[in-house]
Structures are given as C-alpha cells and as structure tokens.
Length: 97
Image 1 (spheres, rainbow, N blue to C red):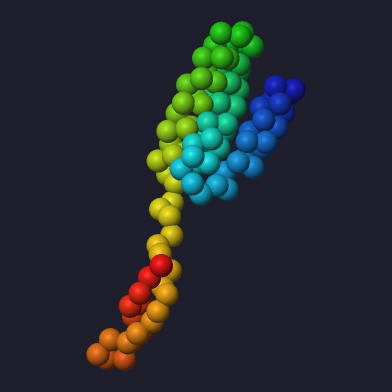
Image 2: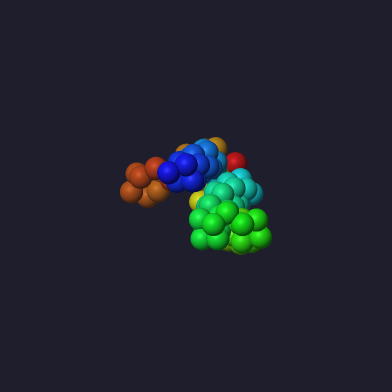
C-alpha cells in the first residue's frame, strides 16, 4: 500500500508540469513525468532493486522528453496590424506584425 501511495504521489507531482506550451517546456515536463513513471514501474516490477529502477527512470525520461516535444502546440500566428475589406465587404488582415 505504501508503494502504491508513493507512486501516486510522484505522478501527481509530475502532472503540474504538463501545462506548458513551448517545445522545450513540454520536453522537460514530459521527461519529469516519464522519469517518475518509469522509476515507479521499474521499482514495482523488480521489487525495489536499484538498477531496474534507474533503467526505468532513464527510459521513461527519454521517451517522455521526445513525446513532450513532439506534441507541443504550434506557436500562435502573427497578429493583425491593420484590417481592410475584400470586394464583398468581409474583414481581412492587410498588414500583420
């Protein structure tokens, strides 16, 4: 029961890093969540031995960083500095910044 609670607490602490938008921030958050999850799985699967726990943490962190960076949303487009109208009167951006 203590291991399950510790694993849940580690994963909950890692969830706070998921609200990032740049690829670097997403990679760091993904690495933290993946590392904690991998360490937890490695510890549970090996009975708490150090080598499988560290291996799980390393694989989880690397995978989390790659997936986090790959799933970052695209940056917002440029804003409109000046609006105009097309031949039908609909607004269109004529100058962006």
